[in-house]
Length: 522
Image 1 (cartoon, rainbow, N blue to C red):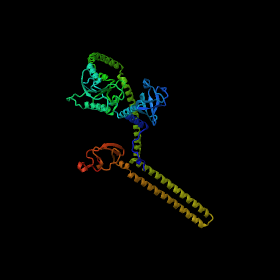
Image 2 (image 1 turned 120 degrees about the vertical axis):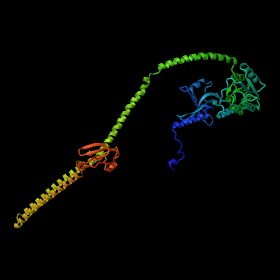
Image 3 (image 1 turned 60 degrees about the vertical axis):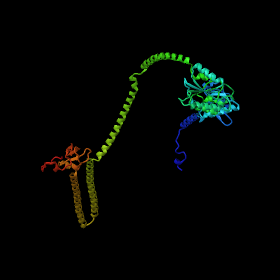
Image 4 (image 1 turned 180 degrees about the vertical axis):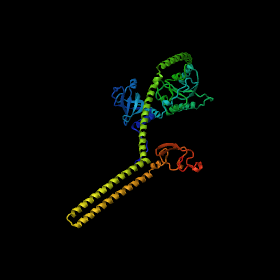
C-alpha cells in the first residue's frame, strides 16, 4: 500500500505550536471555571516569584494546580500539605510540558457530610452543563414596573419585602404563593417561576419585569428545596431576570448560582430591586448639574488636548521624510536594475547581430571567396611541389642510368641520348600540365566573378532587401509603404514602396523604357 493510501494520509498537518494552541482553546472553552475537590500534595510554600505550585490528588488521579501571587495574597485560607480542599479555578494547559493544570482563584476546606457531598456533586454537574455560567445571567431592570414574588404568603418574608418596596419606590407586586419547605416545595417553586414566564406581555395579568424567589433562614435541610435540580433549572431557564433571596447572608443554595442576582436577605432583595425614589430624584438633579459642568470641563479639556496634539503633531516634512527616503532608495534600485537589464539585452542583441552577420549573403560570399583563394594557393603549391618532386625523381633516375652507362658501349651512349630526349619531353609535359591547371584556375575565377552578385551590381543592377535584410525576389512580396534597402555597386539607399507595389506594369500604365535605359525600379 502506498503512502497516500495509509490511514490519515489526508488529515490536516499541524505544527507542535498549532496543536498545543488548539488543545489549549478546546480545554478552556470546554471546561472554563470549575470546582475541584482533592488533597493538596507537593506543597512547599510560595516560590521565589511569589506564585504557588502544588497538586490536587485523589485515589486515582493527580492534577497540577497554580495560585498566582496576587490571588494567594488575598486568600483567607492558605494551602497546607495533606489538606482536603475544594478549589475554584480555570482549567488550562501548559504547552512547555504538554500538561493541563488548574489556575486556582479560591480555596476552601471540603465538607465531610453526605448531604454536602451530594450538594457538591449536583453543583458540579449543573456547572458542567453551563447553568451557572456568567454569560447566561441577565441584568435586572433598574426600575421595574411589576415585580413577581415567589414565597410563602403567610410568613414574615412577604411583609418585609412589601414594606421595603413601599418605603423605597412603590411598584405593582404579584405574589405567587408556594410552600418553601417540604416535599412539594421544590415543584411549587419551579412551577411558580415558569408560571410568571408564561404570562403574555400586555395580558390581563401583567407580566413581571423582575422575579424575587425568597425564604427566611434555616438549616441546610430546611433550605434543601432550593438545591433541587428542578428549581435550579427553572431559575436558569427564566427569561425574566431573577433575584434569589434564600436564607440569611451566610446561607448559599444552588438557586443562588443560577439566579441572575443573589441577595443576602429578602429585605436586601427588595432594596436591590428598586432604587429610593427620593434619592433618585436628588440624584437626577445632582447629575443634571454635574452633567452641565462636565460638559463645560470636557469641552475645555478637549480644546487643551487639541492644542497639545497640534503642537505635538510632526510637520509635513518630518512625516514625508521617511517615505521620501524609501522612494529615493527604490528609484536608485530601479535604475540599477533597469541598467543591468538594458546591458544584458544589449549583450544579447550584439550576440544575435554577430550571428546574423555571419549568416548574411556578404559574409557567405566573403567566406566563399576566401575559400577559393585558399584553394587556388593550395593548388599552385601542390603543382609546384608535384613538378619539383617528379623532376627530382627524373634527375635521380637519369643520374643512375648515366652512372650505369659509363662503362657501356655506344649502345649505352645511344640509350643516354634517348634518356635525354625523354627527359626533355617529360619536362615539356610537366610544364604543359601546369599551364593547363593555371588556365582552369583562371576560368574558375572568371566564372566566380560572373556569378558574384557584386559583379551584377557593377553592370547596373540593384539588390532590394526588406528592413530585416532579407532579399526580395518578387514584386508581389512588397507591401505598399514597406520600407526597403536598395544596394547598388557603390553603396546602399533607403526607400519605401508606393501604392502600386506588386501590380503588373500594364495596369499601372508605366511608359515603356528606351532600349538603352534601365528605367525606374518602381
